[in-house]
Amino acid sequence: RHCASTPRGDPSSPSGPPSPPGSARDSMMVRLLAAVALFVAHVAEVVVAQQSEPVVEFIGKAPKLRIYPGGNDGDSDDDGNETWVMLTFGKIEELNAQGGRVSGRAITSLAAEKGIIWTQENRTVGGAKALVTRMELPLEYGGSFKSACGGGGGSQGGSGSQGGGGSQDGGSETSPNDGGSKKSPGSGGKARRLASPGSVAVEIFVFTSDAMVDYGNYSIPVTRGQLKFNVESKTWPFCGTDHRLEVNLDIKVPGDKEPKKVEEVAEAENEDEEAEAEAEGSGTKKKGGKGGKKPKGKAMKQSAGGRDVNFDLPEVALVDGDSIESEVEVQTQGGKTTIAFRFPYFESTLLYDPTASFDEESAAESTTAPTAAPMTMAPSTM
Image (cartoon, rainbow, N blue to C red; front, side, top):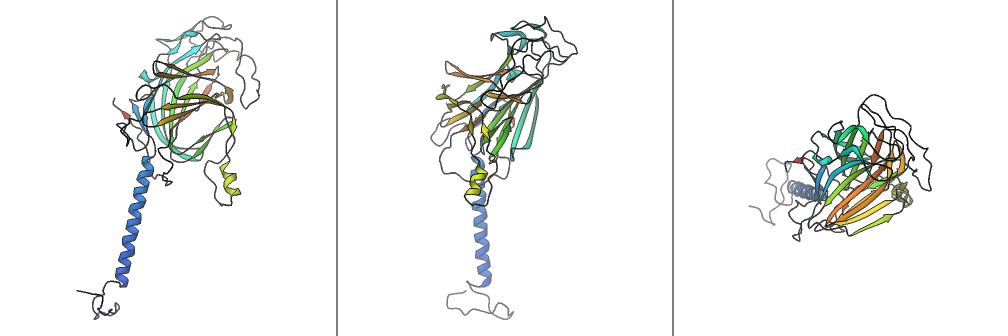
C-alpha cells in the first residue's frame, strides 16, 4: 500500500521498493489513457461527420431513389418530423417543333424499365472523391419505341426504318449568344435512320468533400454531402433536327407539398476560393476552388418534412460537347411536382448536370472529413 508520504524508490534498482503513484511508469500510463481518450473522441467526431452525409436508398435497381439527410433513417428527425425526398425518373419522349409528342419515340417510365444496367464505383470528380451509381438503359426498337418515325415538325424525309446509316443534315449552324452557351439548331432536316437507337442513363453522385466540376464552358460547385445527378443520352434517333428530347423527374416529399419557391438564377462567377485563401496568407489552397462561371438556371426550394431540400437546375446542357441552352419547367398539380427538362437535338451525346442538397440542420457542424463511404447506396427490395 502506498501513500503520499512513502519515499520515492529508485526505479533503476532491482532491490528498491515498488514505484508509488507519480512515478515515470504512472506518468506514462496517464499519457496513454489521455491518448486513448483523444482517439475515442476523434472516432466519435468522425461518426458524427459521417452522419451528416445524405443517405441514398434506391427502390430496386432503377432510377427511383429516396434521399434522407445524414443521421436520419426516414422515420423521423429529433422533432418527430419525417424528412426525405423521393426522385423518380419517369417519362422520356421526343417532341416536335410545335411541342407535340412524336409517335413511336417515347419511354413511358425510365424507372419502370427492366433492362437497366446497374454499376457502382468510387470516382474522383473535380478533385474530390464521390460514390457514383450509374443506371443505363440500352434502347431497343419495339413496343412504344419504334424504328419508323411517326410524324412531327419540320421536313423529316418520310418514315425512317431500322438500318445502317447514321444521321442526316444537322440543321442550321449554332451561333453564340450573350452568355457562355449556344443556341440550339433550328429548322427541319431529315429523319435519323440508325441501326441502334443508343441509350439513356442516369448517374447519382454523392461527394465526401467540396469539388468544382467542369461543365462545358462552366463550372458547377458541389459541396461535401451534396447530391449531384447526371442525365445522359447517346445517339437518340430523332425524327427531325428541330425536335427536342423531354425527360421528366417526379418529386415526392412527406405530405405531398408543392415547392416553396422557384426562381430564376442568372449566370454568375463562382467564388475563387484558392485565390481568396492565398490572399489571406493562409498558405493553403481549398480543394475545388477553381472559380469560373456558374450557368443560369432555376433554383427550387422544396419542403422535405423536417428540413428543406434545394435543387439547382441549370438551363444549359452539354450537347455534342458544346454548352447549349436547354429548358427547365417546374410543373405542380394536386401536390405532385414534376420537373420537365427539354433538350435540343443532338447527334451523339447529351449530358445534363443538376444538384440537390438539404438545408443544414444547424450552423455548427463537424469539419472532420469522413474516412469511409458515408452513405447507403444499395438497392432496396421495396
